[in-house]
Image 1 (cartoon, rainbow, N blue to C red):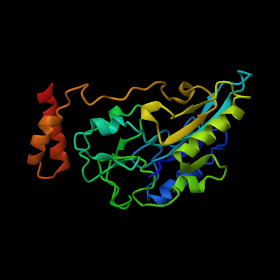
Image 2: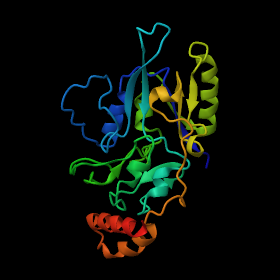
Image 3: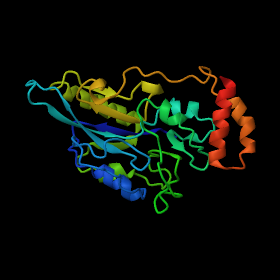
Image 4: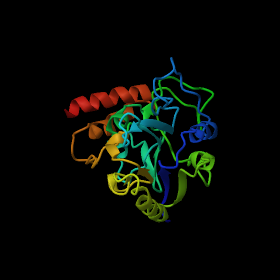
Length: 266
């Protein structure tokens, strides 16, 4: 099966946030609680267990330093080929569905390992139960959630792409997406010499390819990120595999046993 991928073209994004709204509606996600109006246009401020994608609005330098250019970037899980979250998950709750990185909430124990391992701050633990929301099951407190590329409530074209009015989001075969991105980059570089494509090589190649007007650091994206090797640390997986049988299937007990497993492995 040929790999699919998203293309995020930041040069076409208008910041309308139709992608955010479509994702919320399709996946039955509640609104984020915002205590006060943020000082930036980005709202909510970041991804969360109930916000699978959002539009980041930031300023990048222009020829006139007193007039920054507002840059919009659609952000969600990058669906890495070599995913740190999969490597560190002790419960094997995170897996690949073809090329998409998916969290199985039934297996998730809420240990927070995936949250800390992701350099893009994508997975988040739910801070409370949302008994009327979710797809394929309610959103449970202390379970990890993120974008699943509309594979849980499956559809041919993901909701965010279908809703985008400016063609800033594209969904197609990855080889075609890469070709489109490279062709587009040649045009963009005439006005933005530091423009680049993010996701071609990072973490073995991503399934969300992003065209940036400037260097990745300007968008909070690390350059040359390093995948975690399974042999790099003793994380207690061996002990947990044995002790988890004593949990009676209770996530809170599993979390406690995993903490004990890490202690024993230290």
